[in-house]
Length: 511
Image (tube, rainbow, N blue to C red; front, side, top):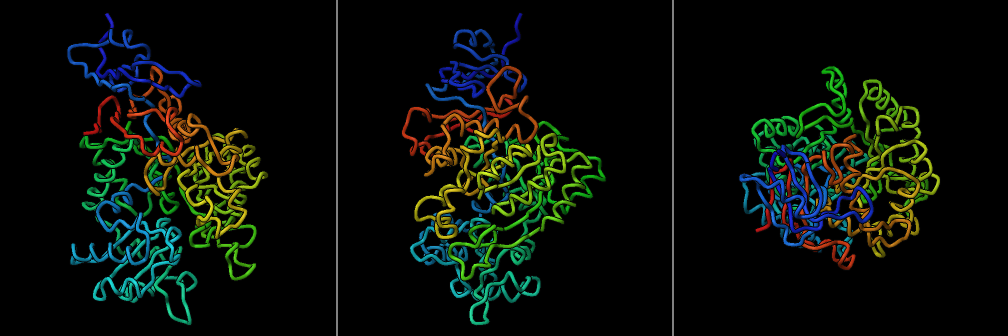
């Protein structure tokens, strides 16, 4: 006699994403694994006395979303500290920071401002933040986390640890804007302790589940996150699968303990070794072949954070230990150098990844395919590619070469979508990919969803375990109230998530 299922999802349109247009009416899960996908009657035969039945009310069942690049504690910081996303002016940002200042006696922290969306297009300055408080540190981190704005107290306290070249000045005086390595002392100074990290991750996990996210690839550097994730897992509190990508600072420790990519539990595993090569377009620090369109000189082409020679040493050390490597590279010069290094170090077998990979010529797309690297990209960044957006001012006509998702997919390059928590919302990312302004950037709904499900699983070497709705795979799903195939493309982000299921258990239920 067939053993009953633990969970049935029924009255649904189950899109497996395994084959084009394949849909079913129901799915059954037992012991955390999918055991049957088919019509409602067939699946109902697995209903037992203790089986949980979820009536999806005609909604769409998909594999759970995999965010292949995020910083989950940063999502928590947006929820706990001043959330500067969506403010429309420097004055509005200052007002929100003042609200936070009234709530705390300590340092005032804000996260996520994006000056490129303001009519007054400028960074927050020291003068702005001095108006929030002049007796304690005030720090506002830009959305890309490569730029921060500080008040006089924070600048005086941390200036000695900041490289001169990364502290912006005007007429010999600091503006209060710092970039790249000058941001690091601020990260260190305001890093949460273990207890606060746990609070941030719990808040972020709840938010991720509400958005249909069932797995994340989290970038970890100098953080208590690895310990907290394992504690939450041991206590049965983890409702997300977490793949930890460790910074190169931790390579020696990872190698010495004999860890390899994929080691761990069902919920927490070792991922890749992570490094930077360049900066960001927002800070004009992404490394380009040609100068920025809005630069003061023809020589302003960004900067190396880790130069190609050092990157090669880091990749070799990781690859020799059987560890996947993932490198942040945004500008075309940085992507080119990263692919050169990956070509020498078994990129295809170890599934080395380029994070962001934004400015790509046709030649670089071909190189990606030849090298066999994974393009771990953030489709939500396409919001800056549109007319009048940040990338138009930074790159001019070259914005049309940013994130050519169609070209990458057609060339056979594996695509893994993530958010970099800008924002953490897979449906927003899918909408951006489907409505991208250039044909070479645009994907179909199915292609974009696969990049946010199977693509993330592939980047983790787990495509036989997750990423599609098929018997034998993990019981991780998202249920949508409406079909993204049946509405206008520019409304995909408005679709509600009604249920999120991880390991066969409902971890989020709308209402």
